[in-house]
Length: 255
Image (cartoon, rainbow, N blue to C red; front, side, top):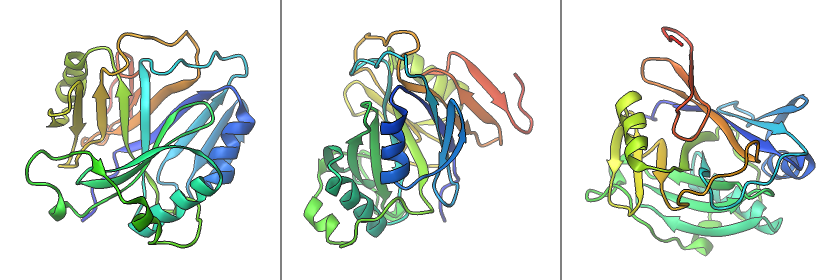
């Protein structure tokens, strides 16, 4: 049985709209609804929304700095992952690498303004590691690409699977994601990182301190906010990396 969908949307501030649309619309194949300066992008199945906030005067976010480490799109199967990987590689997209995490196979890219993008597919839960839930091992990229000889856009069923954030303090992150939102801490073995999830999933949110205390300028490009659907059916829109400002909407929610 598939895990419930928990991540609904992500918003990024972008300076070069043409480059962003070239990547997310033309290359990845997302559909666009335009309401300038906002551009909402969806896969064909509308399993998530990526909202681009266009601000041509926004300073570029320095990397690394507090905020988004990467957001991760979950493909329905290995063939779909191979097809979109081939498409990005053939187009010369910024490729950071590939990894086998035990629970998943993952590919890492960057968009034109440096935002981290992970593309991954989950292994069946029965095949997940019995020891530490996740690890990092090499992934045979040639073997993966052999699964699909065609370069394809994102599959219609693609979802927003998880987010990974640069945060200032892991204790604060745990207080918020585990304490306030009720997620389980699923992994503590990565130095400087914690992982959180609902529903027995491997992680909906990762948090790390690998960027140190460095902050981006006010109004910089990058992460603006994201929306989670909690197990009580509340949509929680987080307006900064660890949710110091939260807006709750949906059935049973309170401000």
